[in-house]
Image (cartoon, rainbow, N blue to C red; front, top):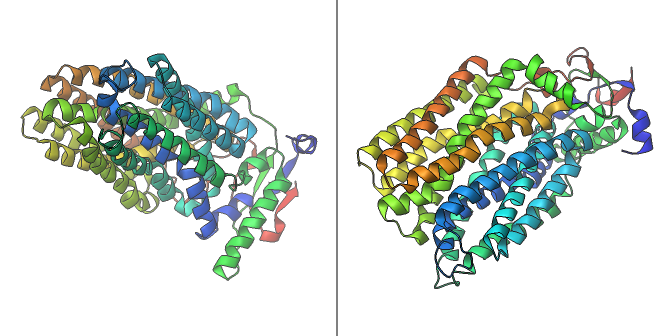
Length: 501
């Protein structure tokens, strides 16, 4: 922060910047935000899927690494998630302190470097280390990106856009599945080269996204609170001019303003007190949603290929076809159901998607135990389960990014992601690898049932505690800690901008 910015903190200003951002119609500028920020989940999906699908090839003699399939789907997967958890906490705090843009550039650069170095692994310890660091970068992305997206997207579109972006993870999963088919085909590339190319491609894609992301602005909401109101005003005015020129008409007048006591930072203790004391019920909701979806996804995603090869004798090089199918089902969930989160509402949609996916998973476990499923029908069952589960899982990120005050947003996302994922995402892959590794149907059924139970419990919690945040401004859903008065206390015109109170 510059000397001028530091001097600006401590002032009290009244502004209609949040209202001006929320009243904007959807435009090409908003698509640039979606592309610049949201496409990183495609990389995450690519990473997770590739590792699951190449596990069999990596464990074969001649792969270039002395590693077992269980180590890839168990230990390496757990290290990736552990890195994501620690990265979320480390970068999340800095995102609230230093700003959204600085951090979403840094974290993507970390991911890029770590992925590139994974591709040149020469030993198991090197592979494990850079799987951890790849996750470390991705974890920071979750906090920085979800914060920036929610603060830039208009309130009436926030739910569907957030779900679509988080659901784009599965576009990466489709790409990872299809890429692994080519990479594992020894008639195309040698077995010690193909898996390296998949990681190298992830690094190339990250570089492209990094170049696009340079044009995404800092969050005006964050700038406003941190004493950089003149910069916030310039950014919002520029956005308004672009949108108005595209639409060819005058923008609607913004409704409402808010008074802010500007400050440079918020202490960690104040964040903790706000989240776990002032918003205790919302904290319970966040933990429930994250634990349920994290266990289901991290456990099953990392182990799906192993189930196909072990129980249905699907060749290692063909598992990618099956995974591509369920990945498409996953993406279609948020895409088709996302609008309902803004219209029908958060509480109904969050609780129903969690409960439906849990009940369908119980049914899948029963059919699997009865021996009634083939590789194809199991994949079809998983499509049905994950169509709803994916929308529910995406809504977990939406929920924690919008139900806590602005000053705590990135850290709240990081906190719930890290703790929920640590409970379900680290223990899940390791437990699931052990259960499926026995080759016993009953053990795999147990893993399914655990995931189903946690999803159903989370759905019941959401039915009681979910916040009705649809089509409401972020400042209305959770009043900023720096706010002197709530939004809607007055009405101002565009020209009013920001004024000292």
